[in-house]
Length: 104
Image (tube, rainbow, N blue to C red):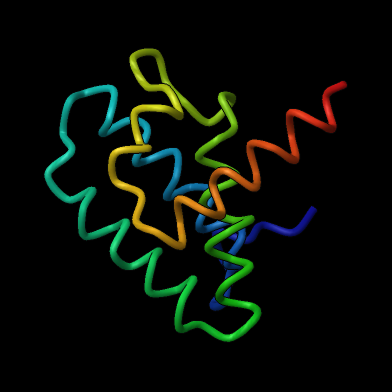
């Protein structure tokens, strides 16, 4: 098995998943001061990024944030909705719809 922690260039999707876990831990602890800046960056990635960066923001970040398995006790996906900006809110809703339809 490849130990990506030792890699000079770890896969960005794995790193963003770890970041999502970190945010859910902060959320559970009530430490949300930096969330507006985080979501401003995600918004910028969705609006201005190349296709890889947009997909990383959408599938890597937002989809992981919607996944309840990434959340610690005291954190829920809906806690983050207030920080979404227009492009990220649209992507969030699209992902919710996709997973609701997929679950039928």
